[in-house]
Length: 518
Image 1 (spheres, rainbow, N blue to C red):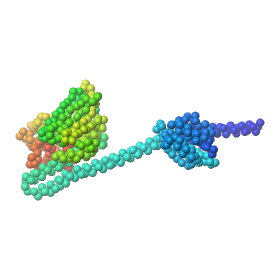
Image 2 (image 1 turned 180 degrees about the vertical axis):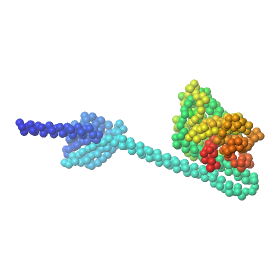
Image 3 (image 1 turned 180 degrees about the horizontal axis):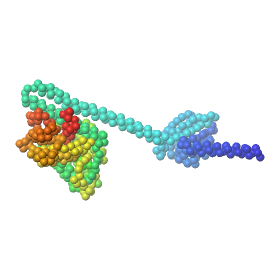
Image 4 (image 1 turned 90 degrees about the horizontal axis):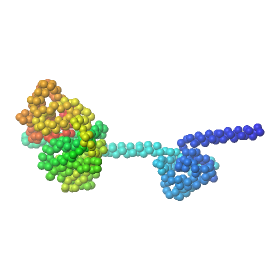
């Protein structure tokens, strides 16, 4: 009895150890199975049994390896690389081989399957879920590909920017050299006029680069409100009607009743790019800006009767610096950045932009905007979306313009950038502000011809009263090279009407924060 009891104790201890080992192996994440030299299953832990959704129901001890493979195939949990019969035959033929493979599951997971030979002719098979590792690997690969794509795009961008900047710079270099030795005043004035155009091209480019830089840096955040399009269309009409009139083009805005939901300032920038593009590439006829209802949205369309774009070029016209071949024949070539800015802003606002065109007949650009409840329209709220980086917020500026419409339009533009604008129509009002309200402007923007007065004289008068050289900008519709040369000779930078907002923004930045660049 004593021997039998001792033997029973040993058996109990062995069973307890076996149960503990089995429990421990069931608790680990890796599936483990042991096959004997007769190809029959000796042991399989719970994770192994669950590896193809069997729940342990088909992996009884003693099952043949070939039967295990067959039941795996029949479970449809493993996505086999070949037909099931061919897979079963191939795996069974490699029983006991030292190998590793990855298996995709129907639920999206990925398993790492490793088989190793063991002493006596058997085999150990392990299965490990590597789904998270594969997801991380895919994420890293996608990030790498995205970084490479972005790097390539930036390289193309910089090469194109380098090319577009070098062209006017080369022109300036030659003209400056020729101008220094030119004695004929009329020819020298012509050279100065061409130099002015070259500088304006570079200002356009730098202004667009500034906008793209702000978008890349995430400094432009949408401020979505509900508003009516009537006011926005009126502002665009004021901004572009003179430019269209110079080309004898008919510019019409057909504003709908009702409201839309978007960022008003950013939507205006999208539409202003569309209208500017239409005017630039239209020689005869006109431009119509109107709307169509599309379900619960409104499609704002800009139609022109311009050159049109070949179908093969349409997919690329929103790319940076891309200019369709026919479009480059325009007298004033675009920089290929306006439509790219449109695309970026549309993505930011989650608005769809489209384009369709018929060569020789015209083009239609459109942006789709959600409809809003007219009773929720924002009234009198300040536009803050265009306070790019906040650099102009609170900058006290004296604006001198005798045209009522242009003065209001310029005041609204500057206020959208956060500028503290004091708008007057002439010298008398300007000096009264200085004396009666103790105005202390940090910048002066003045029209040149002010009904018998000159903006340059007013700026000098303000400087004399304040006792310091307040930065000043002269704007004028007079493109006579002699007038422009005279203004510059007096030390004032000049902008030609209609004033380009990007060009004005860059010039203001330089005068206020980097005066050494002027």
